[in-house]
Image (cartoon, one colour):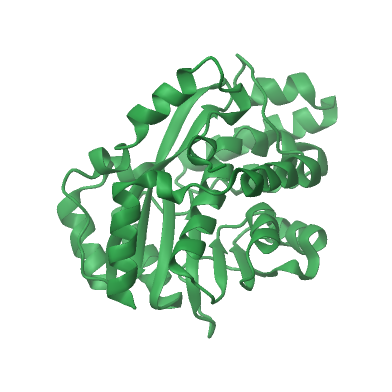
Length: 312
């Protein structure tokens, strides 16, 4: 099973259009994000804090601005940015702020769904760093797997339980996570630490909650700067074999522009090391995406990897 998954992922990585979902399913994901979570496309020349001030009520904008200032102070002191994630739980702010990451969210969810479908993974799925449960909600709608979400922000988990309900299981926790449940797929979007030692604990923790042959889909801005010798050593010690490399993202953000983050897919028990030219492997499809995004027929809201690869 492990070898089969590695071989199948290698083929998908060589032709990433095979990762495309049927356009109807992708539109269903997009519609759910918009209608249930108010996560929608917008275009703005403003930074996110200023955009929030422009579209939210004065009270909500003030709370978000204050949370960002607290988070900046915490980062200077080497502490966490929890204040921003707590502020995002505000019913008025959640959709507005998350919309700035719409392209990343659509692409990450779509990639996870494609991997589940292509590999025929039947077991539980974990969203590690689920925040308010948006991805869990969408996954529960489009796949038959049991869905779980963990996040260290207690307020976010409260919102997830309230808004997603029994469609998914939520706990206040982070990776490494002590649990008896073993997963066929773990999705981790922007939850991998930057620090090398912390990253090693994170990867080991992900491996620990995966079934043999289970798959980890990890989106992180830190992949682009990874030291390959260190990364290969860490992955080998965690028994995570390389599957494929990709990018998620497109036209979004505040200010709105083209941006992307690396995404690596691993198999528990695999033996294949990641390629030395990791950035080139991640960006191998970016040229054709650029052509798609620059076409006059492409809607601004559809300038994401998932929509580029969507199948009729």
